[in-house]
Length: 125
Image (cartoon, rainbow, N blue to C red; front, side, top):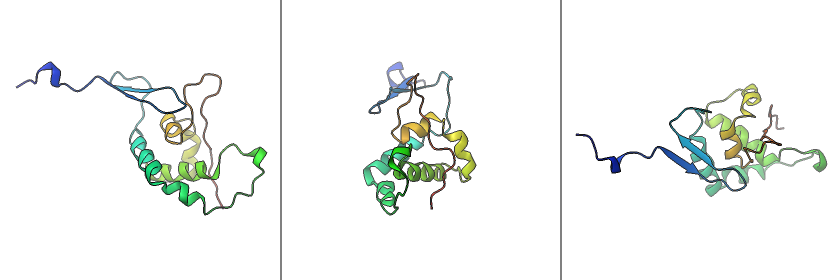
């Protein structure tokens, strides 16, 4: 039996992120990611503050005026990469331009004059 049209799954979903353009999820193709589950991981991490607390274990000896990515962002990006199955550090060269990773790290996406770019090779002592 075919369900009435009112019981159908919506054709698209919207995710609103602070400081970013809305992300619209639909089934029309276009820019596609296989890492959409990362949004759930990032939300759980934000609520439980796992990576934030872990980042406090590290001392940052870098010069503040030369820092593009905080220790917390580097750790969060590495852990999220591991969770999503990207265990090799060289995977981050491609992931640095992945919009889903940028959203999960709270970076702005969709800004034409300044695209979101994450760290490429993560090395933390």
